[in-house]
Each structure stands twice: as C-alpha cells, then as structure tokens.
Amino acid sequence: MSLFIYNSLSRTKEKFEPFNPGVVSMYVCGPTVYGHSHLGHAKSYVSFDVVVRWLRQSGYRVKYIQNITDVGHLTDDGDEGEDKIMKQASLEKTDPMEIAQFYTRSFYEDMDKLAVMRPSIAPTATGHIPEQIALIEKLMATGHAYEVEGNVYFSVKSFDDYGKLSGRTDQEALQSGIRVGLRSEKRDPSDFALWKKADERHLMKWNSPWSIGYPGWHLECSAMSMKYLGETIDIHGGGMENKFPHHDCEIAQSEAATGKPYVRFWMHNNMVTINGVKMGKSLKNSVNLKDIFRERDPLVIRFFILQSHYRSQLDYSESAIKASTTGLEKLLETRRRLHQQQTGSGEFDVSPFSMRFTEAMNDDFNTPVALAVLFDLSKAINAALDRQEGVSERSRKEVEALLDYAGKKTLGIFDENNRELNEESKEDTKRIGAIMDILFELRAEAREQKNFALSDKIRDLLLVKCGIEIKDTKDGPVWSEK
RNA sequence: GGCGAAGUGGCCGAGUGGUUAGGCAGAGGUCUGCAAAACCUUGUACAGCGGUUCGAGUCCGCUCUUCGCCUCCA
Image (cartoon, rainbow, N blue to C red; front, side, top):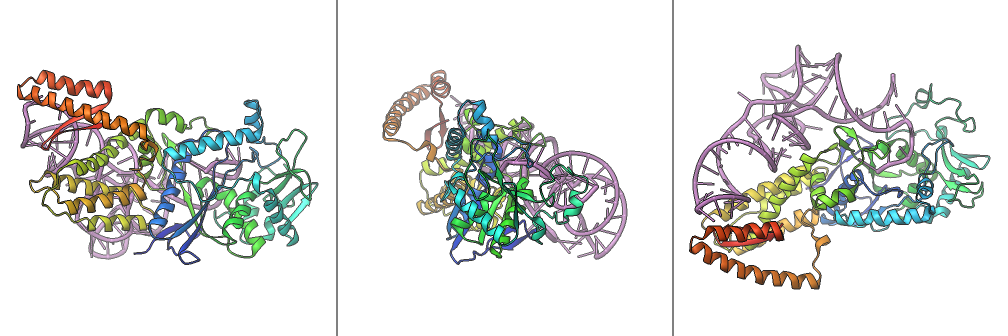
C-alpha cells in the first residue's frame, strides 16, 4: 500500500516516494517568535508532526527541519512597517534577542505538551545570515537580483514561473491599480526584498556587501532548507496563508539560484476559525494555548485537531472541545478496560482495523478516518469484553499493540510523556493503590450490609475531593484518576 | 477586481458514481442496589435550480452564501 500526498503545486494527490530511497527531507515553516503560541500554531505543528510520525512508522528516515524566525519581519512589505520583534521588545522594555529566546522557549513548552516531536534541526534566521548573504550573491551574479541604495531586490520578471504555486502568474494584472507608485525604487512592483538597509533605530542588523541591514523575510527558509536538506527537498510544509507571497518567493529565489526544482511536494494546512472567521493576532480573536491548557488537557486539543483533516478549516468552539474531551475519554477508557479486565478465551482479529487505519493514513494523512477506525475498534473490543468468553491474552496483546502503534506512536493522542511519572510520583501511586484497596474492602463490607449510603459516600467523596473515580464492573470495582 | 477553498442530519466532521463514516448531544432498551462505563436499537443529512448517467453529497453548468490569500500571519 503506498502513500499518497496532496501536492499543492499540482493540486492533486500524488504517490509519494522520496527522491533518495529510504530518506525523506522535510522542511516546515516555523513560528515567528514574538508572542505566545495560539491554536493556529497547534493545528499546524500537530498536523505536520503526524506527517513526520507516519513517514517514520512507514520505515523512512525523516530529516525534519523546522526553523525559528527570530528576525522581526516588517508588518508591511514596503518600508513603512515595523519590525514585529523589535516592537514587542520595546513594549516589554527589553531587547529583541531576549524576546526571541523567551518566546522560543514558550513555543517548545506548548508543543511538548501537545506531544509534538522536536524537529531534527531547528535553525534560526539570525544564525544563518552568512548563508542568506551567499544566496543573495548568487542571485546577483546570475542577474536575478539587483541593488538600489543598499537594498537588494529579486527581479520577478527574471523568473518565468513566478506565482506558479498560488496561481498568480499574471503580474501585470495583479499589480494594476494596487499601491502603484508607493515605491519607485523597485524595477517592478512585484519585486520583493532580499536585503534591506537598516535605519538608525533598527536593532537587529548585520554587515553585508550592500549595507548594514537585515535579510528579507522569504530568504531564510530557502537558505536554511538548502543548507541542511540540499537544493531539492521532498516535502515543504506551511500554512495556506503563506502560499503567496512567501512560498512563491521561496520557489523563485531558490530555483533561480540553483536551476533545480526546489520542492517536490508542497503541503499546506488550513486555518483555525472561530465562528467561521480566521483566528489571528491582528484580529484579536486568537486563542492562546497557555490559556486553553489551564482548562483543557493538551492531548484533548491534539485529538480535536486530528478529528478534522489538515487541509480543512477547523472551527473552534467550547462545545466542540467538550465533545472531543468525551470522545478521547472513550478511547482511553477502552484502553484502560482492556488492560484491567481479566483475560478470557475469546479471540479477536485486529487485522481489519489495522488495515483500515493504514489505508486512512496513506490517503493523505486522513486522521479523521483513522480516528473513526479507532472508535470502531473500541466498540468492537468493548463488545468482546462484555461477552462471557472475554478476550484471550494473545488477542489482548494484539489489540494493545495496535492501540500503541496507532493511537500513541502515530497519532500521539495516547502519549502521556507530559505526565511521565518520576520516582516520587511512582511511590505516591503505589501508596494510593494501597489506600484504595482498603477503601474497596470497607466499601465491599458496606455494600454487603446494604449500607448503600456509606458505599456511595465513599465513591462520591473520592470523586469530588480526590478526583478518583470508582466504577463497579463485573470483575469488581476499579478506580482511575480523572 | 484577481487567485483559491468551501457549503453534509441539533453540533463537530469524513466521504471524488451504487453498500452504515465516526464523534458529541438526544430518545428507547439491556446490565446494575444506585451511579458510572459498556453494549443494542433509533436520525431516510448532503445550499438552491438545471444537466450528464441505469444510478450523484460525489461529475458538469448556473444561482445564492461563507471563508482564505492578494500587507505580517500557522
């Protein structure tokens, strides 16, 4: 069974095979670190995390690069905009590098909670100024770039395929009537900056052959992608809103420089919306992850994200999150039950489920269908456990292996890394277990004497005061932490 | 205006020609002292209008509506 990936460039699903057998080179646009991450970041990086995980499960070695943009790109492509990181630095009365460091750490904190695996390499833009300058020099030498008073621009006319990703190929039509005459310095209004001269008050700046300045905002991805993955890479991922101009510019400058295809598969994930409207910082409707995590289990958020396809918009609402909480709990409950219940003699065939799961994942990472398979499995296994003959030890092991493979390793929704027990809490768990045994005994006595008021009181108080839930099953009482 | 995506049952959300997606919520039932969990039963949805076809959420056309990009943005 082969993997098919939707390629934004061809707008079709294509059979995926890496350029170099066995090894996948993958680059995903990382965050600009000038604020805490929001739900949109979560959707993006969870989606690509599953892509990486699935490629690895499929036997590929994946070299996964995800950059950190720590140069504040302008809020405007002209000269009028402000540097976002610098702006935040002055707001917080500190310097840009501290801002970048602070929010980089914040980003990883949140991603760790979401069970997003760290990239193989996380290069920063500021750490790759020489590479970016070298790329500009190459473009200058080949006549694709030109300098005007310390600024360097890419000449869009010099690259025939400009706009092929977004479908914006007719530059004349695009530019007619739009901000004409705003800048006379560029030869063509569509030309974009590769290097900008810094003014006095600009804090992040570097020496270059053209001026003391800073790189243009499309440049870092090309430079770092080529440095770590080579001139042609297998997969480049990013948000849909970056198709134009960011990715089209990346293609132009990279392919103009190397004469080779830059990316074989372009993958774009869709937006998170709130009441049908895009979530964005500038729109003041963004949902901060740290805020959500105070109320919700991060893995519920991960599950919620994976319940829709990465290329679909995801609409956020309290009720949707609640539904996901209950849904994920159902799967976890099945897993617990399977683990706790005594073994029987019944045989259970997992192969149809594992085949359907693989099929779903191979179909452009269709996680909603993959999850539906897990729900079907959950139902089937619960039904089997309800039966007199139960489930045999061998079958139990097989189901557990599939749940581990699908739910934990691939989708990451059972990933309890963020609550990994240390030695101290292991001791605690042991002690709680002993206490629970005593309470079970007392409760059993009460129930035998039909003193249900007492047995219910034990159950209710444990839930309310300790967050421990008791369930009376046919195999006796079980407890779990809520 | 240009480029692109989308409209599915109460809500979320899959599905590129023919068989039940799935989750949540709701209703009825089984089990249980009760509760919880679980299981069983239950919903004839596909924006509208035409067309293609033996057969269409699924293909084509038109209409309506929504959303994204065209400034930074996951």
